[in-house]
Image (tube, rainbow, N blue to C red):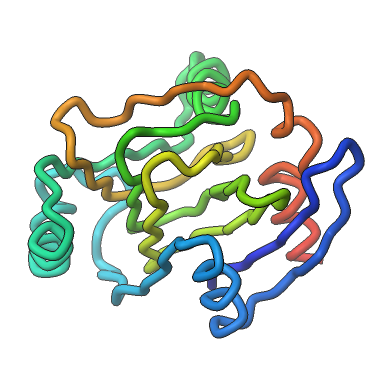
Amino acid sequence: MTYLTVYTDGETPETLLETGDAEEIAAALKEIEVRLRHWEVIGDLATGADQETILDAYREEVARVVAEEGYTFVDVAQLHPDDSADWPKRAKAAREKFLNEHTHDDDEVRFFVGGSGIFYLHVGGKVHAVLCEPGDLLSVPANTTHWFDMGTSPDFTAIRFFHDDDGWIGAFTGDSIASRIPDFDTITARRAA
């Protein structure tokens, strides 16, 4: 289930809202022009299924979003724990790539097939931390300042939509705000308690 935490963006962030209520989440995100929709999750996809299998399973939903929004490139991003000796290094590198605040000239649209991650949306003096889980389709408008945290042990599969065939291109702000806001591991542990 989607979960939203809203913080102030000062040197010592304060929590303004914590909710799992779908209507509250939708209203808060609408204020910053972010859309959250939900798709039925296909439960028989194996963790680590290949891109073709995943896109085929969600063919109708993907086609609908492409037709509505004019996206030209769709792919699947996924990262799952494994037993390889280099897993900790790969997990850390993947996490660090997205942990710094940035923007894109394109929308950031993700559908979570499996696993979870938090999109931190820095808008209007607040940070909206949107915990996305299976079934969540988050649409963040182009040029929205944000970052993404997949936690210290990333485990997710997401379908990504782009208007540009080059895919993910970030313009980093250099702001250290991500270090001041509770991270994925902290938020998910607090929510589980």
